[in-house]
Length: 383
Image (cartoon, rainbow, N blue to C red; front, top):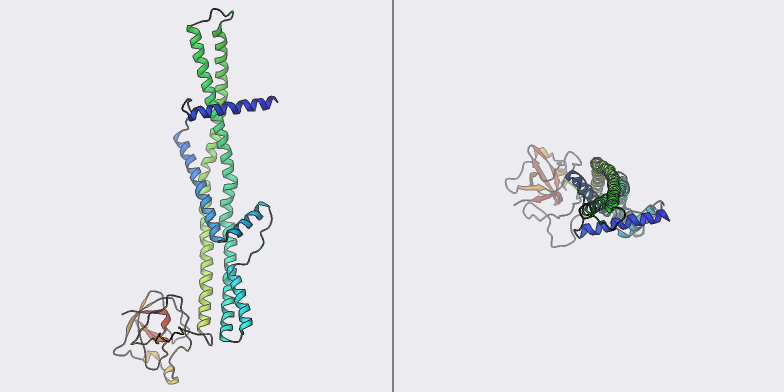
């Protein structure tokens, strides 16, 4: 009961001191400018860490219901069940569709090829989510749930020590004022001089002030050390950020490689349909160019010159026509399948032209002294 009463008294004293400070009726001990800067930097670090953490979670798992489910599993210290990625689910649907529609048909074969690529994309996404969670999200979450809670606890304790210190200063000030008043105007009706009692009260207030000042200084030093540790937190988060970028780079490189492989497979897949079914789109030739699609193209099949005698013709011996050559900008990188084709790099400019009897999906491209066949869907013809 005594401890409870003492705690209640301390709480009441702090509440009074805090209220008087808010109304400007009491003085407040101010912290030095360096300490205030440390507090501001710590608060900013905490706020931005929370925002980055939440948005990274949205990036890795866009489904809010799934995020809530994973959060509950973590709070209950239970293992989060394995979840099928969207790419893996799409791969499953495509494989089932191919099985039902006919795996031997051109459409069915293509569905199987695409489903295999989507499955690899889903596996790459799963690895990326796992790696990013361990190397980036976990350190950020550990800071918020560990270091920051410790800092917040010590800051609250420092606030209480400051309130106790300022309350002691206010009591000492009142005791000295009463003592000074009693010294100038003594009370002769008292059998015992009042100034003696007030002097003892002032001495007790001074002793309380010294104790409160010591406790405040000690707590301020502890809090300062924790706040200065934010610099180490920044270094750790910087390392984690590099790991996140590395995992993200690996993930997108894997996706690009898988899709490039798929594109090459589809380009040489028997029965691959290239272009559009609309009759209004005429075939591309040296005299009637069309605008290329904005999507990633599929390499056309039947590459090369259609007549056998022209297919066997050495391209180095083919001279460009006197008229009909055009400049073209390469839209995407293209790796030559054989020596008759010309490898392309995105955004480079080449000279192209068509030969009589050529497949309309292909042109002859020249870059310097190099010459070879190039797919039309990889080019943007310039006027």
